[in-house]
Image (cartoon, rainbow, N blue to C red; front, side, top):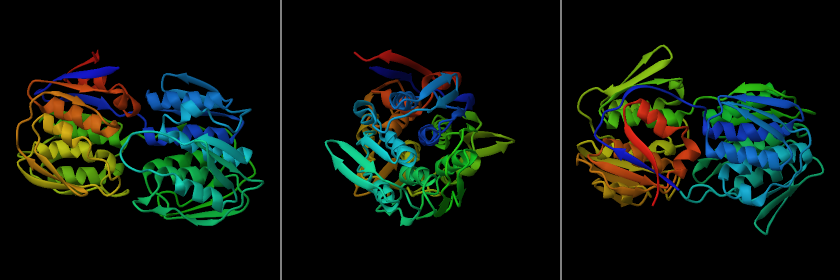
Length: 420
């Protein structure tokens, strides 16, 4: 198992190119199961989750070929039962259920795993499939779905913490091959959902309203192959932007979509960070003294929960008190105790973290608990004095392509070492 050894206190400088979006590429890979024709996906990030999904597609009978950042999938003959041990390791694997149900009218998928950041039930996925006419049964760690035919329906996918991103994509994929019209109300509006919809449209699906709370899908008889480039990863871009600010550096970010980052950049600017745009590039640096700001995570287009931990590090370095409130996942403050090892002063009160910022951080061994917590600990280590060792960085490899290499290109002293 690897860890990252970080010698902190060095401002980041240089250019970094943003990779394809993890949360878009996984359901897009699953969507290739909807057709027997070959599909090409470009700007595919080199992530362990992508490799897991490729193994899952292969186990279902698809031919998968990855060259560099281009993936070709041909699912000419597939089966409807997923590999238990593969699927249970990754939450995103549940998104194969919609395509299997749409194309084969049956799917058997193990209950998925993923980061431990709070309850993320798949009940809304199953509710949507049931509305389309599928019979759902959960037993023995598997979800079984079967339908003689799928029929379009009006359905509501809002949940306790808002809309479900993966659930919206999953039901949308199944509905592309249903009879009639499906209307999803309280659909997730995230850019990743829009990207999945654009891929499906390129395959011949009839979808309108993606990016709004109401998505309409008119079912078609069959879909065909398509060639698609994945959108850039907005959370990766936010992570490098916050790392630049935290280390008092200056980083040019290439390939990001500023329109996907409005909420993050708004709070960063309020905190005194300078963000300038030069054509397709963004430059991030401190504009002067940092100022404390309050942050509340919300569904898109609000401040993303996936950038909450990274923003907390910046506030821990900023004089004053800031309040960071988590409204999406109830267990997403697991990084707080590890930041305390580095000297951060943060108190948890219900869904809020009270950050008493301005204290210098000093390096220490820390343990990553999930993907975004890992990124936050890396940023903290970059800003801290001395050496920080971030253990269990396999979490990082799930969502950040070559993060240690990219940081070294920015001047960071980061080494990947084997944990003892």
